[in-house]
Length: 344
Length: 265
Ligand SMILES: Nc1ncnc2c1ncn2[C@@H]1O[C@H](COP(=O)(O)OP(=O)(O)OP(=O)(O)O)[C@@H](O)[C@H]1O
Ligand SMILES: [Mg+2]
Image (tube, chains in turn purple, red):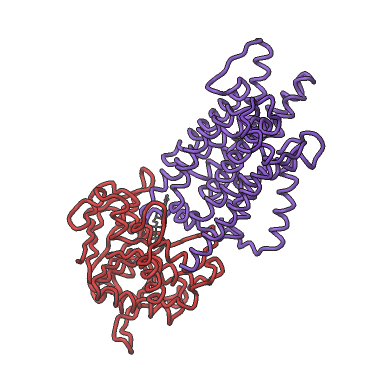
């Protein structure tokens, strides 16, 4: 009982800080805006072009903030479940090669479209995003076929196949970079650094519709991940269908990651550090760690985005900021906290 | 209500061509402690996995209360049968009490939220397994024997009627070993049925109602009371070594010892 009250207090505290970050994200930027001004404009019922503050908040900052929240939350959750399923502390949403395959897809898409000079759109995906999503899907399919070749889903095969496919995709990216036209190179490099500077609500809607159901399915597995933490045999004895859990985690976790990567690029580090930081503070029970990772992941990416657009020159890609802030912070955590060794 | 788990003509192989178990009959009933003994690699762990439905028999059947075990859902099964594997390796650090609460899994909803009753059961099992002083320790930092006691508590928190335990005392000291088996006896008087794999034939002789002896040829060599099973003939055959059996001067139960090669006449 005592433990439970402490952890719900923690969740509320973290949620409050996150709300603070969201408010900051709406007001801080190249120009600092005030909500009061926006409110006045709202009350006067002005058309958008005569309401500068309101229009910046509603048309630029809000979708951007929402994109950061959803992407950060999804990536942190994916890291958390991959670490649990693969029983490996180094696992990230990208361990299974999804980001690299997605990036390769984006490259291939750009080049193919340039060459053929066509354009299309698939659901709300631009051609580049569609290719990125397609390649991530191919990566998943290949891994699935490999890992289930010998009867059951084998986490170690998942891990090895994923890392190998990731390396292959990276080699493909390097080749493309080497061959690419310099002009193309600039725009693709920018994509590879990751950013949440989405334009308008359409990408946000896609993210929301894609990520929410995935996240809910994964959150519902929390108790099973706790069991799996003590080994597949004990978990199976307690009534967990280990095979199905691994399949669901792999499928849904990868899908969620592919959707996010195709929209905002491969933003690094969140999936690794957020779950570990949360475990360091709140213990390892997944019914606490998973929701907290969702909140902290979203708030963290939002926070990094504020830094990217306010403190650093121009529009620095947020992927650089997550690593620049996250890396040292994680090292600090490693130094300060006693990390019990994962017995892999 | 007491339960009965019964396997008839069980056969199993991990790979084609192998035969790990061939034609094994076994029953674990409420109110008895059944010891499963035999040399390394004889198939004891495999037999337990088959018995609790983690592996499917190739022929024969496992029945729980006269219904085919496979017809139960895994959660229904876990409410009746608890299984403690030979090795358990956690990756997350949880406190001992949290580990014990994990045993409530088959009884709580999919989200794993614990009610007051669940916490009470966990507290009681902590006491039953004599692990109160470990309550708030990090499970990862426990010694091998302390871990086994805590895992037993987490198995008991499952509130099963049948326990299948794979070498639960392999890391316990002489006092805790004896205490552990005494606890099994107490549970069995309450109606629990217990199947326990052990290499300690002397403890098995003292605390088990029946023994099942598997041989390296992967067949059931003998089953019956400890006195019937623990004979020099059967044991020497099972272990392919010269095994001698006497009577323990203090407990009056069979006392088993193996000859070292250089001692052989
Ligand atoms: N997953 C597996 N795949 C193939 N063979 C296996 C597998 N697990 C066990 N075996 C083999 O099955 C046989 C029986 O193994 P089992 O673990 O049941 O023995 P055991 O009686 O429990 O031995 P011990 O006393 O050493 O624990 C052994 O020869 C072992 O090598
Ligand atoms: Mg064994």
